[in-house]
Length: 235
Ligand SMILES: Cc1cc2nc3c(=O)[nH]c(=O)nc-3n(C[C@H](O)[C@H](O)[C@H](O)COP(=O)(O)O)c2cc1C
Image 1 (tube, rainbow, N blue to C red):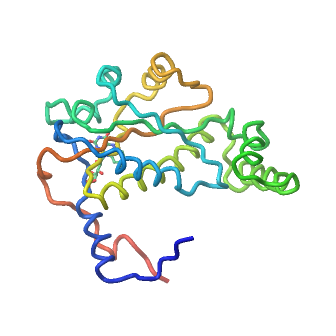
Image 2 (image 1 turned 135 degrees about the vertical axis):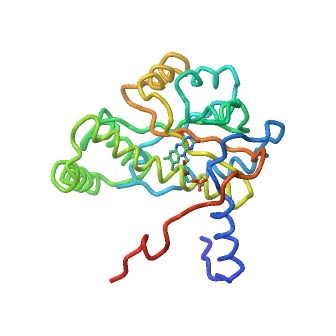
């Protein structure tokens, strides 16, 4: 196991530089492609992301073929360069994908899918699986009251957004630009994933899209954020 002990001020600057560098890139340089090993690092950051109960209720669909990307364009205004009138993220990103969120079919406490996940991914013994079923069941029905189809899919979507954030930060640390996108029609995206990508949309629903590549130009506006005092309260 790698233990991180050497936290220098250089490292802190590097981290903050990456966060300042990252912006929601609308148009990428279409001629610059991300190296395979660098994109694999971004995907590994996704795979290693934490999820509630370790249920990993997400899946990533990469959409690299331009004709496949074009299927999303008519109803994905947020991936269309927004006001830039260009071919936007869909037309210019080196890498484009959709993160899907697990639905109630698999993420309801006690589901067959979860039993398999506990056994084959988490390698839990039967008695611990029983404890997980009980604790997660209570979490769903009492603690967080996440029981309807929509609530469960949204809960999975929350986990998907952690994955998204880690991917973008990993990219930024390597000087790779990105854009998170939820500017799309949910129903039509779901239909497209079923009809053209063979996704079982009973089990998976789109949560958010992402694009990675290298900016075509610097952002038009400086980054704006609330002050630290308005953002954080200490007690
Ligand atoms: C969940 C999420 C969804 C977003 N959807 C879109 C989108 O559809 N299209 C887009 O161009 N930007 C989108 N953005 C980018 C935000 O508008 C942007 O992050 C915000 O204005 C702050 O700017 P910055 O990221 O450049 O610092 C989204 C951001 C997040 C986190």
